[in-house]
Amino acid sequence: MELAFAPPMYLSTGKRTLGKVKPHNPMLSASQKSFPRRLSTCLATLSSQPTQAVEFEVENKKHDLLRAVQDTQRGLITTADQRSLIEEALVSVEGYNRGTPIDLVKLDGTWRLQYTSASDVLILLEAAARLPFFQVGQIYQKFECRDQSRGGIIRNVVRWSIPNLLEEQEGATLLVSAKFDVVSVRNIYLQFEEITVQNIKISEELQSLIAPAILPRSFISLQILQFLRSFKAQFPVTNRALSATEPGRRSVGGLYYLSYLDSNMLLGRSVGGGGVFVFTKAQPLD
Image (tube, rainbow, N blue to C red):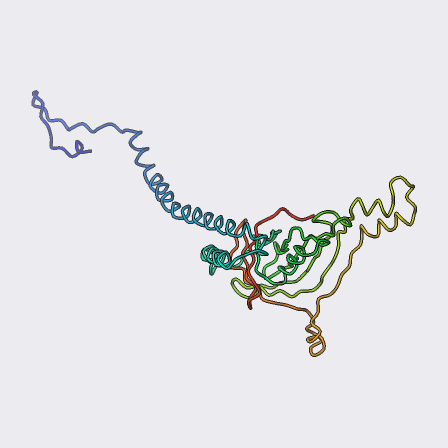
């Protein structure tokens, strides 16, 4: 480019000529045009690095939390030091999600319980530990709210069994259903509606007692088997004190603080000292 503005040059012939302009270089032009694009790509890469670092940090904190609760039998067996360590790990994870509104699309689905300090759940676990005729299998929370904007349905699912009468661990299902409404950025209000006992799966031993394989199965024995397999008992959840004074308010309810939520972990706190919950995402239930 300098040659285009150079002073006139004189050859030996004495004739005046203009300085020659450098020919157009298409490679240089293409490089100049791509510079803004390359600059924006570099800036985007630099801006994504802090985000990736935070995501890596969160995953490490979540791993620390799951490691802290893994030997507690879902909260049944804990020492004071363990509870302190778990609470510290909980708070560390919760800090990354504080103030973020509840994402109902992420919340929708089935979550498996890994740890709790809630007394109503620990009672079940204690009973299973003490009573030889009672077993508690997996415990889930199932949220149905994908297409909702302000709430949905939550189902607490407990798999349980009676050895020798029902199949191991998953011989029957206890289902506690509730409606929930989003009442603030991170709080939902649960209104419990019904308790259901269903999905009875009797053991082979019990089947053989009702209808021995060596004998022809009678109509009555087949009816008994069918009744047990299809058995379903439902009980409404009501507050008798409220139903007597306020007939329009019968259901039991409570606040539930969703302190952390992402694609594979859900942390919750029952408002009013009801305990903490650690869940991980599970496969959909049948």
